[in-house]
Structures are given as C-alpha cells and as structure tokens.
Length: 391
Ligand code: PMP
Image (cartoon, rainbow, N blue to C red; front, side, top):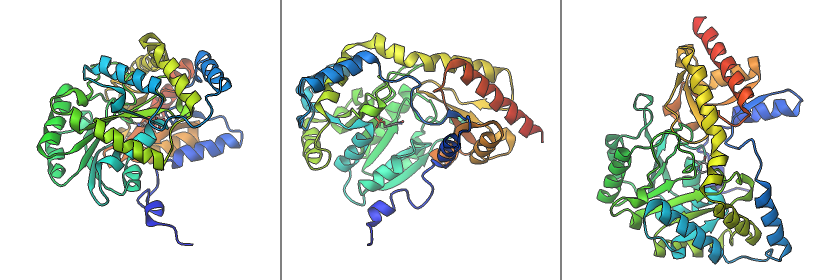
C-alpha cells in the first residue's frame, strides 16, 4: 500500500543524522565498550523522590484520562514559574501541557502555519526540526549561521527570508552549538518578527543550563507575548526525559485552539506523570542547579583540555549539555572524523553535519558521562585530531 508522502518524505529524503549514533549502538550490542558522547541524555536517572511521588499518584488512582489541557495544578505551577522567570503575566490559560517538548514543537507549528507556509529555522539545528515542520505540513526554510559569528543568528540573513514566511523557530540555549543568544540577537529577531508578522516559536528546553551570559525569553520583549509560542520541557531541567512532559506557553486563543488539537491527537499526558512534574517543579531552583551542575563542571574540564592544544577549536559553550568542536584543522568532515574516532578509539560523537551544513567540519560532544571518563575521552579526541592534522 502506498504511504503518504507526508510520512515517507518526513526527513526530506536524506539521512536523518543518526547514522553514527546507530553504528555506536550496534557496536555496543556486540559487546564492544564504546564511550558514548552522542545524545542529550543525563548520566543520572530521574531522582527517587520524583519517582516516589509518581508512584503514589498512580497508586492513589491518577491513572485515568487526565484533563486534556493538563491538570489545573500543573498548568498553574508552570504559569507561575514562567511569570516569575520572565515578568510576563502568565495564567494557566496560557499553558498547554504536552507529551514532551517534541510534541510541543509539532503542535506549535500546527498552530502557526497553514499547509505550504514557509517555516524558518536556523542552521545548525536540533535534528528533528525540519521533519517536525514537514510533519505539520509547512515548508522548512533553513537560515545559516556562521562559526565565525559563534553561531549567533544575523538579522541580515533572517531578513532575506522573513517576508515570505509565517513562523521562525529559535532555540536558546542552543542544541547543538551550546550558544546562548545575546539580548542584541533576540531584540533583532523580535523586531523582524513584528515587522514581518511572524510567529516566533521559542524552544527554551535548556533554559536552566546557562553557564555564561543569561537566558532571555523573547516572549518578554515588547509586543512579543501575542506572537510567541514558548516550548518548555521537564526533560533536561529535571532529568525526566522518559516521562514525556513538556508545555507550550502562548496567547490564550492560541492555547484554546491547541487544546482542540490535543483532543484530536495526544489526548493529554498521564495524570501521575503530571503530578510528578508538579512535585519536581516545586523542588525549586536549587534542585535544577543540582541537575545542571555536572554539565557546568564538565564544560570547565573541557576548557582545560582544549586550552592545552591547538588543533581542535571550541565554540563558546555558554549553555546546554553539549560542546561544538571545530575539527577543520584535520582536513576531514565532521562525519568522516566521527566515523574514524569511533573505529579507532571507540568514542562516539555526533557529526556537525547531522545538524545542518553550517556545522560542517565540526562535531558535537554531549557532556553526558562521568567527569574522569569525559576528560579522558576529550584528551584522546584531541590527540587523535592532532595526529590527523599532521598527516
Ligand atoms: N528541543 C531541543 C533543542 C532538544 O534538544 C530536545 C531533546 N533533545 C527537544 C526539544 C525535545 O525534548 P523533549 O521532547 O524530551 O522535551
């Protein structure tokens, strides 16, 4: 039977960027010891008190259909948190709870774009972005950023596409680059969104992981609350990736329509998961800092390793759980380097090319293994790059 082009064409016909990761997983399945620095998953599991709360909620009967928009209690907690962090008035009616940030990204594009509309996003990008946009029926249009600008988007590059577009998706702190957008960048983006009447979809799932500078939510900029859909998630901030709990923050009428979409797609998020998410958010900022601390520590370790050599370049890693490394001095593509490093040293990293052409000649390293092993792997990586550069 013929499948729809919507689904068969989701990845645009090319690779979905996960080839090196899958090869590493296949090696592990064969019993080979691989150091995995690929996906954005913490090396700790969800904290026991959160799991105990989840268990109690389920045992107390919160296992039936939950309210489709999210429980009142969780929507209230998320709204209060967003208001406290951004100073923008936010009520539960501005919040839809979703099964993770990924579902929120899809729903936000469904809300912003009609079929065939152009949806913009910056390269390098989180690997699912173009497929998510295609899945929502819109046309992905990528806008390059440059290593020489430390991957901060430029207004001129955005203006070349913004007139013909319906939405712009941004992500700060950024996966894969670790870059935190400056106030200047975000103000320029907001100006263009207002001038050209774009929806801004702001992926802020790494907002608790900022090591340098500060996180500014563009929803807080003048005139932006009415045209911004913020994507949030419990995955990264609370090490709850498997719980699939996130949200969209937006104008009340957008959220009302998104609730109708949820009724016809996900039908909500399990009640016991939402109770545990509320419990987790109630632990406050100290708990979030504890979850983020290993990445901050490993970033410092990485800076030390990279300062002791000249072959591999470090893109300023201001936030999130990744490092973007420039390996162009080896003369190899990011992909060739990643395959070579996996074959020679059993270290798995993501090729920059998996995140778009702007990150060609780079690799993304997830800081997601314990400190000593992480430092050792980076030393090996740098020595390997150095040897290649001398060939
Ligand atoms: N946005 C970005 C930038 C991400 O890196 C991820 C997960 N890696 C997501 C969204 C989706 O996260 P989740 O669905 O787990 O909330």
